[in-house]
Image 1 (tube, rainbow, N blue to C red):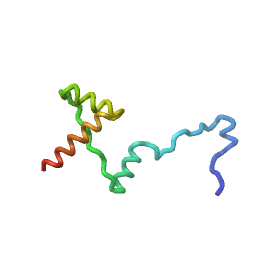
Image 2 (cartoon, helix red, strand yellow):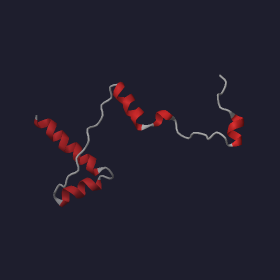
Image 3 (cartoon, helix red, strand yellow):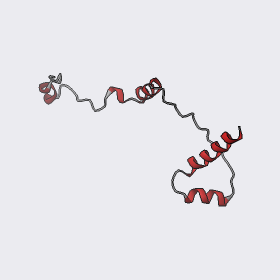
Image 4 (tube, rainbow, N blue to C red):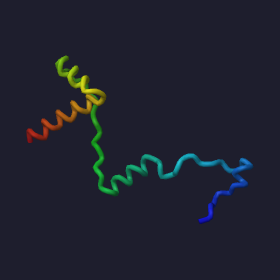
Length: 82
């Protein structure tokens, strides 16, 4: 397959090279995910939550992502309560 790039024009600076692929836009990626039937995660709400200091320290001691783990525990509790 022959390239459609005009190398002469590019070398003379008359044509600017593109650095981004047009389909690398987030909208295209999300659209593709929806078309394939992948679940999109629902938006999360930002809240202020009071927990015991020892509970918070335990979650933080598990490493990065402690808020995600707290959310997972709460979600598991919710699902088990139904």
